[in-house]
Length: 211
Image 1: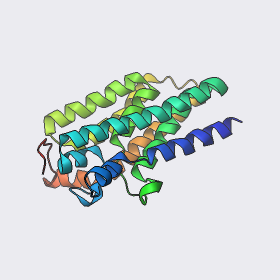
Image 2: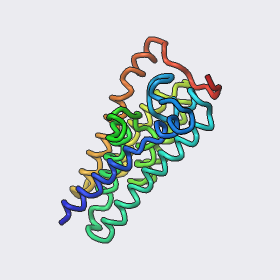
Image 3: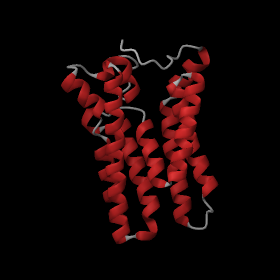
């Protein structure tokens, strides 16, 4: 029965994650597709650069919210049915939500890069990891003005901090750490072009001005 609950939260997480609000908002309110503007990424940073900071903030809030809803749902289901597996279930749900955000079934599998989703997921898995993730993001963005660099470093901080706070005393701990590493690897992989542009000096720096 436990496998049924895992399948349920995984599918639910993916479908909720596939509700990419940057695409929805840009089509409904801007009468265009954010994926056709700026970097072509369906995320809050490109929304801000393409349509202004309000659009970026609204998108960020909605991305946070959908991840929160999905992971809280997983927490509730597993608390009632398999309490010893709550943390891995929340992690799996967050990972699937991230997959849906990056490869949304409703939008031809072309979405964002999962940064906001991964950030909230880290908080839901372990609030201490969430602090480490957001601290790494803010520090590197503040120093470099590269949102992409902050995103990469924040993603890397997730499994590293989780390993620091985990005593590996159970298979649940190991499972959660593996999922955290997969999320980090996914986000870093999706930023591979940004990394190249940072190295070559071609990456855009943070700006609140609407283009």
